[in-house]
Length: 317
Image 1 (cartoon, rainbow, N blue to C red):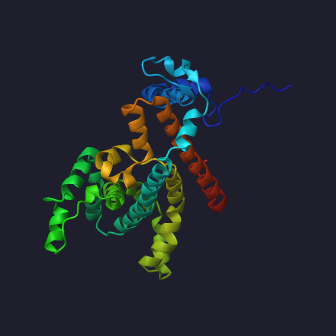
Image 2 (cartoon, helix red, strand yellow):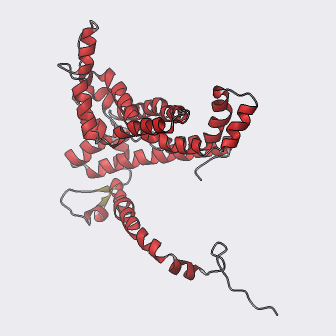
């Protein structure tokens, strides 16, 4: 009888799993802080979702999260029967939908444009200038928006006055909140979001460009028939990931920009959860609303991923 072969890892050149762990022990040590971070700040707080099904009372302490009286779907029924539900869902969806429609194509178009620049030095300079707004604090950006759009002395209203148009109080008119939010968000993030698309375009083989030029293709044809098809998998994957936030609007920016005068178009699920949970101490109710929002996001991602897999064979999982 032949000798029994020792089970080894196929990718480790004959080494066992224990040997691979010992070989890469220093890399694994570096991974420990990351694992601890996600356990403490991402996975451990998930146990608090049980509050969505309990009658949590303020003052019952940490253990009260798990020992409070079970009430089932009471808080979900209360939210579904709330007069604010249509407004919250509509505002949350529309803000993110407009941000996706107007904000998602811009990084792609910018990445294509910047990679067409012949001078590498100019290309890098343009990229750096467009990356900078992303690193500005949200608080600072919102302060800039309020200053620029101020009805008294704001640069936008000064330009309107010079054109013979009366000053507009942008921040107190509901119909202006969505355009301000979407435009400012696109300006702040399009440069940084283009990094992945630029990398994907730079990964296209120069031989393919040369072959198309030999065949007589102009720049427009190269972009349409070579560049876009080459980065299509990247576009699809990022689009699916973006759809996962369709019901999650940046709380900080909305909170810093909105006021009671624009609740009609600015009040979203995240700000409602903040008011109910932090300001009104309705922690169980706020948890139920947040859980509902997360479930909707997951359903959207799951559906988009299934559709993408059937249509293009490109998916996250």
